[in-house]
Image 1 (spheres, rainbow, N blue to C red):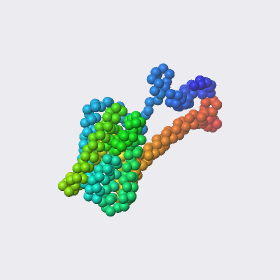
Image 2: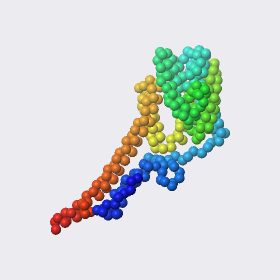
Image 3: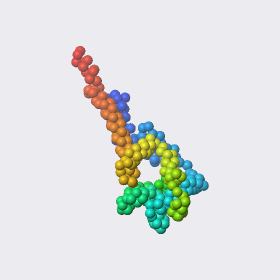
Image 4: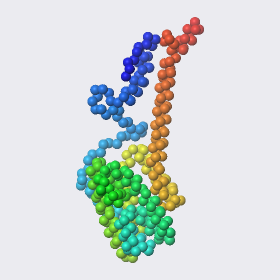
Length: 315
């Protein structure tokens, strides 16, 4: 940085006050202070009203497996409900099992057989199921970075990218535990879902109305239980709250699957508003600093203020 040259017309204290803002700005932009030794540069600061989340500690493998088995078992039992619903909508045993084996995303499967059972066009039913399954593509973008699986494994792992496996993987503190949680959840859920689908389709008449059992509520309940502890900051909670409002608000007026996509707009909307708030605060602070600098520029060559100059003229 170029050295400050002393000006005889400005007292030393005022010269320091004038140079201090630019010196502080340079210190923030030039990186780590020489001799600091960490090379980390400026430390990130949290936005106003938010606290930085505490660093995560490693999680024992036994705890990861326990949680993954719990999620996989609870949600896997919902396959009974799908098997019964699919059989009641007129699908054959082979068609029902093929949906669980090849599609393997419960919400889309229920949307498809529900539309068919209501007498809808199969193409329209498939379109609704497709829209509902698009969210898995967004999950895949995040999990590809988190898991960093080998290329030859990714096509197989992509088949298990669903709500529950994503939630379990994202809840883990390390990549190793995320891979373990994803694998155990996916394997448990895939096996149980297909097994209970088969049993549900075979015993549809004996099982009766699955809504009375409440099995269909297991999936959403588990997903919400996994999601809630992850909302640590005010921004994350605002995104979740707005997503709920958008999803529920558009549910009665949009086709199945579309409200979920609309709810995804909550994240960019909240981040945009947060960016504007931070930008307005920064510009307000800048105008205050500019005013302070402007106050220093009202002195004349002899270092007198305007008030002192007026008194001199009155004399």
